[in-house]
Each structure stands twice: as C-alpha cells, then as structure tokens.
Length: 389
Image 1 (cartoon, rainbow, N blue to C red):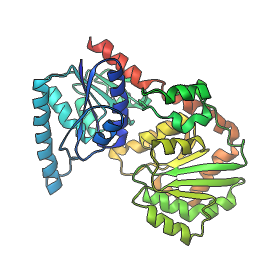
Image 2 (image 1 turned 180 degrees about the horizontal axis):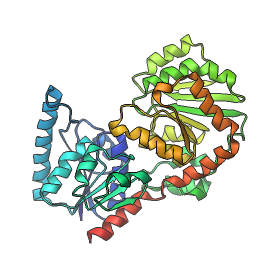
Image 3 (image 1 turned 60 degrees about the vertical axis):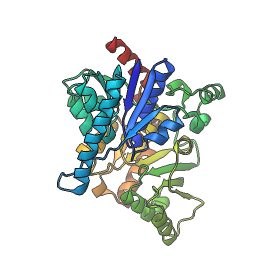
Image 4 (image 1 turned 45 degrees about the vertical axis):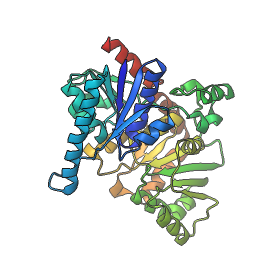
C-alpha cells in the first residue's frame, strides 16, 4: 500500500506525522513524506529514515502583500507537482497533521478522491485541518474538547503520537530493562504509567524549575522571569534552581540581562535551545514547568508528570493556546497566567501554589501521566486499517 504522510513546516506538525509514518513503514507499507522546502521536513525525515519529497510552499497571508501573492503561486505550483505524482503513483491514503505545507497535498488528494485522514494537535483545529475535515474519512485528536469543533466527521481521541528516543532523556525514571529495550528500538514508543514515577516536590531540598517559550522563545516570558528572579528566590521557602531555554533569537539579550540583574549562574542555567534528547533530560529533572501552552509543551508536561504554570501566547490562531491551557487547568494540571497579568507577584503566587500544596501537586503529577493515551501512533494506524479496508 502506498501511503502519503504530510504536515509542516514546524516540529509540532512534523514529528507526530513522522511517528505515524514509522508505524506504516514498520508494517510493510510504502511511505513517502510530502513537505515544504522552507520547513524542517527534509532534515527530520532524513534523521528518521523516511523518504521525503519537498515542494515550494508558504504560509498564507493577505493577498494585498507580495508574500500573500507568492504564497498563492506556491500553492498552485505545489498542487500541480503533487497531482502529477498522484496520477503516476496513486496513493491508497493521505495522512496529515496540518500546517501550511499539507494544504496542497490535501487539496490534490481531494481532487482525486483519495481518502484523507487527519490529526489535530491543539484544542481548536487549525485552518487546514478545519477545512479538510469536511471531506476527511476520520480525524484523530490530542485533546478531549476538540470534538466539539468538528461534529461533521468521525473523531477519535488517540493522543499525540510520540517519536522514539524519549528514553535518552528519562532513563532515570524508568527501569534499566525498559530503557535498554526502547533505546535499541527504532519504533515509536509512548511510556505507560508503569514506567514512570509520580513526582514529589518535597522529596528534595532544591526545586528545579524549567522555563521555556518554545523553539523560538518568548520575549515577554524571558524578560519577566529574569527581572523577577531575585524577588522569587527571596520569597520561596525552598532552594530553587532554574534552567531557562530562551530561544536562539533572545539568548544574547537574556545573557546581558542576566549580568545586569547579577544572577548567579550556579543557580540559573541559561541556554538558547535544547534538542529532544537534551530537553527530555532537563524534563526528567524538572519539578515545575513554566512556558507557553502549545501542544508540544503540554505533551512534555504530561509525559513527565510535571505540574506547570502556563502563559498562553495571546496571538495564537483561534486562541488555541488559551483553550489548550484551559483544558489542563480544568483538570488541575496547571495554573494559567494571561500575558497581560504576567508580573513577579503572579509568578510567585503560582509557584507557591504548587510548593505549598503537596497533595495537589502529587495528584496532578499522577493524573498528568495518564492524560496522553499510550501508543497513539499505533492507535491511528489500527483505526485507519479498520476503516480503509
């Protein structure tokens, strides 16, 4: 069976798609990833042994701008390229995780009446997923609440498919036997509650706090955290150690601000970027996570059972970051600070909430690890297999 996988050009779309691609490949199907030249798809596919075909594709902006005109021309060219491929080698299905680079692939597949299967990572569907869900055979979701936005199509909550390699980062939290088994495997794997430990914030004298704004960073969070460091440190009843992932664009300015604020690097580790193995190692040592509320951050929080403080990006499409955070907050997994209310007092108040409520902290950690269903990629594959044939 010929299977086309698409999604991009950001990691939030690409890596879940690759996880599903590896399952299809494992089961003997011919898999080809269609992506954008400007995205990360080509490099990511090479890293995971998935063949990739790239084409010009740009995010849609206003038609009145040069970028908007270029995006529409790229869409037409990409659609024609995909159509040519599909005509000469018709796929059995197309699986997409959304993003601008998946739009021409899905459009070409719809024109040729090729079955479409979609996965939405956030609570509120993105434009591409929302549009093509009208003609899809099935939609898979990460969040519980997504189904209320797409009532016209069969929906299954599978959770977010996770790529292999997690054991490199959390080997401390699972048995040596399980860690070795996963390290030797090239297949997607999702840890179960048997292989993880519920966190206890009072078990150690020092509380480890991880701050991240995503791969691109978050200037508002970066600046406020650094300016609030001494205030927070002097008003928390335990020792704290902070690791701050600034994003590459803000690293130099944050380094200067750290010097201005006279922050001791022994207690505050500033880094520009962490790849997945490095990030998972940091998460394995983290007691409280502070960051945006994109799907990737929330999945990391759930995977490692880390209660969090979320500061949703206020300009996310459809306010999906706010809705993502609300689902977590309603279940007692996080505390939300809206960006307009972000200050040293709100940061301290929410940090102390987790520190001063050990029973709520342990309950949140325990339930978090159950939130993302195990083996999501396998569930997607099985569902497609059952509905396609």
